[in-house]
Amino acid sequence: MNTLIHWWNLLGADGQHLVVMTAQIVAVMMSVIVSVAMMTYAERKVIGFIQVRIGPNQVRIFGLPFLKGLAQPFADVIKLLLKEVIVPAESDKFLFLLAPLIALVPALATWAVVPFSPDFVLAKLDAGLLYILALTSLGVYGIILAGWAANSKYALLGAMRSAAQIVAYEIAMGFALVGVLMAAGSLNLTEIVRAQSHGYASYVYPWQAAGFLSWNWFWLFPLMVVYFIAGIAETNRAPFDVAEGESEIVAGFHVEYSGATFATLFALPEYANMILVATLASVLFLGGWQSPFEGYLAADLPLASPSFLWLFLKILCFLFCFLWFRATFPRYRYDQIMRLGWKVFIPITLIWIGVECVMVWFKVGPWARVL
Amino acid sequence: MLANYLPVLIFLLVAGGFGGLLIVLGFVLGPRKPDSEKLSPYECGFEAFEDSRIKFDVRYYLVAILFILFDLEIAFLFPWAVSLHAIGRPGILSMVVFLTILLVGFIYEWKKGALEWD
Image (cartoon, rainbow over the protein chains, first blue to last red):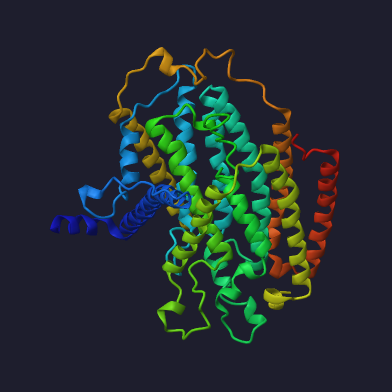
């Protein structure tokens, strides 16, 4: 212990800062990975209950008599790691092994700018939203490379479909983000959350803080719907999962992947991206860490104070919608997906940006102080 | 200013290291018994007919081109939306002009059938 303290003091202020930062980053990354594991478990359990089954209920943590089934995702990870990694003979072996990394790194690194609470965010970037947009766009390279490098027809078809779909919905998503920026006036995610605590309905209603009514969803509701549905399409989730289409192209871009490469290419990034979309929807439209009762209850009550738990609750609601949609809606045809992206979402977002312009011009609602 | 980006750099390295570790673990822990059937591309019980690097539909190119157009448009909108408080009504007017021109292009694409997929 003394030697540890000795080494710690030797590091100096910069070194200590670096070590603490790395520890925080590893902690956030591990939380995301454990959330991914829990998400796969929740998915099987929720869809099981929706279909009147019970879902996984056997694997226990160290054989403890309670929480049956909760260890299922960890058993799955161990199983995947113990499986043979098959690198097809005709594939481009370097790209085949590089693609999972390219898919995984952006899905994890985007978490660096997510504001978890009023004072905890790993990187206080002023270009936070731009950074997220850039990194999530990189994820599509992993999918394309995986599909191309595997040298299998099904993989190539899946990758092409997936890429075209992601690209189409990214536009609607980008326009929805522009609407948020017009309201927040900053690309910094912490500032975007802060801007939602005041200014919105509080200009319409006499009290200062208006809780959930002051969040972005109140004025940008169409954009929130577009953003979330585009997020579902971006992550290739049902009902937009033609890229995987197990009944026609078996599994799409990851058909040739097995074991650990399958986990790195597909399982981890897809679920991490789902959680990210849910988080961003909460941060951008539902006030992030802010309490819905702010301004309605006494300010010193824990229920009315901002907390990480509020963000957590909002994320869980969105994640439940992901699972709910998967259990409810039949898969869209590809032309229906493209029509929804190009001909419905882009016009909706463009129109709403116009509506926002009008609101800014006439100083309506949150824009009363602008200009 | 640039120091704010240090956590991002570390995060990229840590995430890359984690992904690399997973793949290496897969190679170390898993069995390794390749044979020619196992290493052949997936096909429903027969030999693949031809090379799988097939020509794909031209519509994918079209989607890519349209994406570049619209994404550039978003890239223009981002700084405008952030500085909306500072540029005031002249800023809104100029963006209305810009969006109108792009809207005409969008309607043209729509009527030409570039957005159709069947």
